[in-house]
Length: 441
Image 1 (spheres, rainbow, N blue to C red):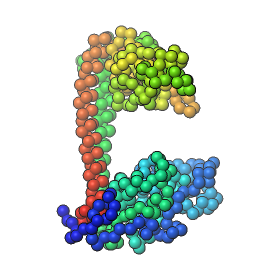
Image 2 (image 1 turned 90 degrees about the horizontal axis):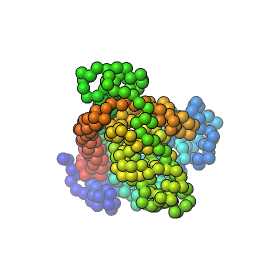
Image 3 (image 1 turned 180 degrees about the vertical axis):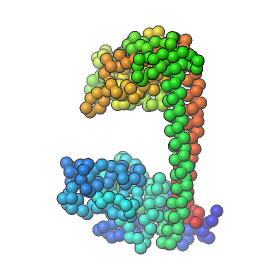
Image 4 (image 1 turned 135 degrees about the vertical axis):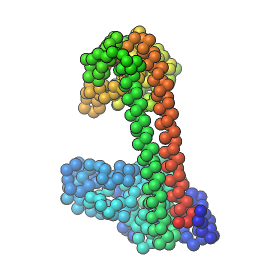
């Protein structure tokens, strides 16, 4: 590992020691000028009712910064609006910084962007390239959360969210500065090294996607075809089910479960809330969840009685009928839900099998969704939705098989995710070590 001959204290905890020949300065010392160096995007009202999708000039925002992709987005403005807001033009080698959400995330504007301006949630930094290399600055400032700047931003930001990030805070951030030639060497080295790491991360992401797709195929095969590869098959008569074993039936959901809609007590009545009855909404569970015991909130018996929700027994299937349609989970404890869920209490069925079955029919459930603000499947459409109905013994065997098989796949996915996170951490450490001089190119 190459290092510099001598080091000195930078005076900034997040930077630590830097090579003796490097300088410490503030961002305001390396911007193009006091008037054209840092600029906050136009007031939101300047773009109100002026942003469309078929006009010649693009509006760049936080989505471009977060993804490092300046092709994203479909906000465009007319030539007249562009000329009115010309001072907010985005040019190659500008640095765009997010003012909201992720603290200070930044991206270097590439050479091949479509002509346009930034929006009101973005800060533009225009550097004096005689003092600092823009590629080096991007690594130093943020490239995937470099700690050199993030710590200072967290310390100095105003408020709890990113309205507190302003041009004064940015100007006064300390940065470490080697010579221009060394900046270029560091940026070139990091481009190569980070590119290699990103390629490895992409491989892990692809592998995870393949495993997730394989998991879905395993579940679909088992819940529609059973576990006997030699079973005689018949047409189920249902497009999303396909062929099923001859001895199986197909039933509407209402014949397999007692179905209950949820409800929400009035929020301004304190006697309805913070009781001992778990109350869940679709926001309380995710795709990867199998079980749920409680939500973010709970209600009282008075709350239950006031809104028509029903306390359902443990081991019911909870189905999200909106935002999004088709998430399913099993409850470990008796609970009730809001109107965004349908609770399925089994009649003579094995809940875990139907948890798996419903989980792979999401696309078909969504076909029944309707609505303008967001899609929702009606209680009637859900009740009449057709599902396979093997014998209870087959349901149990299939669920047991899938428990074991999906657990194996989930373990592989977890390992891939751990490797991916380790690679991301390694990338951060590499950036930090070279932009602070801990290591030498």
